[in-house]
Length: 122
Image (cartoon, rainbow, N blue to C red; front, side, top):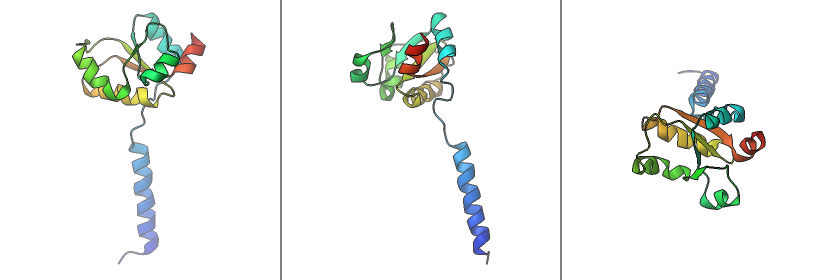
């Protein structure tokens, strides 16, 4: 039988490894880089709710809530190599949306992070 301390150590190690490999949505979130993409013609997608979008959004942004992103991109027949900058309030939902698009084969997406950060860097 293994000592309890060994089992506890193994459990902590497992938890630490799982934390490292857990998905971390929205890693990019650099407003300056996002604006470079936008200035080069990227499609700008606000993935917040329609209510949040109505309260303020970036110029030329379209609103597609993050939970509908895959369906809407497919329905709108958006090219897989289209440059896309996604944003939300903090970068979390835009990161989830980005992961959904990557799984569909979109190769040119960028998580711009939060609306306020982007608006302040404009």
